[in-house]
Length: 116
Image 1 (tube, rainbow, N blue to C red):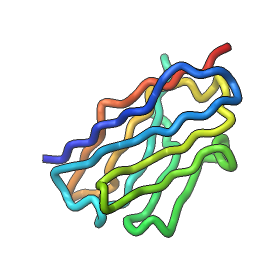
Image 2: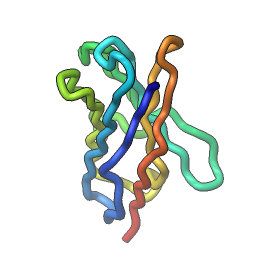
Image 3: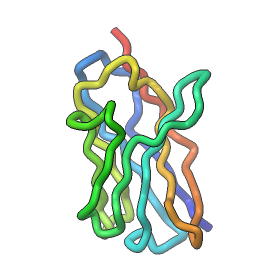
């Protein structure tokens, strides 16, 4: 059974940083392309970033380019999202999701609130 557990969210002021983690189990993490999504109150899910199985390819939505960095540690079965220079519009529940037909899954999410 695919399990994904996010952590690291919180309340921060604009300009501050957070690092989110996603602990994976129940599948071969090192074989799977992984994504971060977010969902703000009253809005639909929004793709944020993706990383391939080996970590050599990453992609980002335009609004977070240069501020967010996705990474992974396959030895620890963990996905990360480092978020710098956070803005109020980054406020959302962030969750990780597999990009795999064999091992579909998403976590419950972690709340990120950016407010002064």
